[in-house]
Length: 218
Image (cartoon, rainbow, N blue to C red; front, side, top):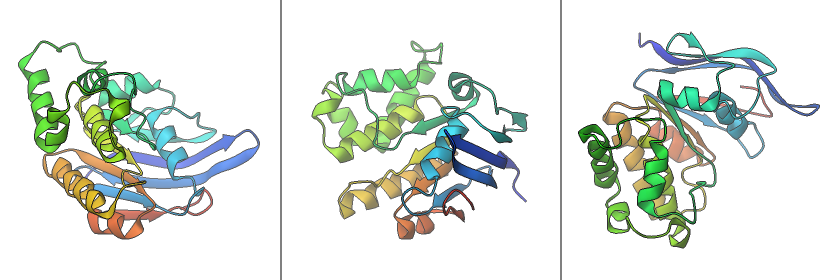
């Protein structure tokens, strides 16, 4: 049995008086693609933001590699080996592709090293379009290109676990297929994936394990 890289135990999260997440528990086995699926407003994005440290936990805990990270600030979680490609891509629109990728490596101290260059090369081999457009301002790129950039930026933190929030949102079917084949490749290269998706068919095809969220409950 694979060991759990991430464990969410009895997680409760509120937005003011509204319970967004109610007592959810699930695990992400090391080396897997695990998906959370559900309708709009089910709590998928809130769950990912809470795992990343962007939302406060009301009750329950989050364990990463056997360590309780429930109260750790987001940048410490990135240092430990967890990064996120957010819903809506969230690229830095006034910066170039290269500057965006560099921001993904902000917790690293090895920007002039061979390892850093290897990671840039890895992103460019996964996303050749980004290499072609490395000096282009991110805000002038198409939605699909921005999605590639958001995933590439998350990879620059060298994560053991990458959180992908709605990577297919707003993309044409051909691009969706391309993004999912890249997610498969990222996983084969050794990165564990936690995927949030509304496109249930694509998510279930890609995933080893799936959890369905409905109004804040698994």
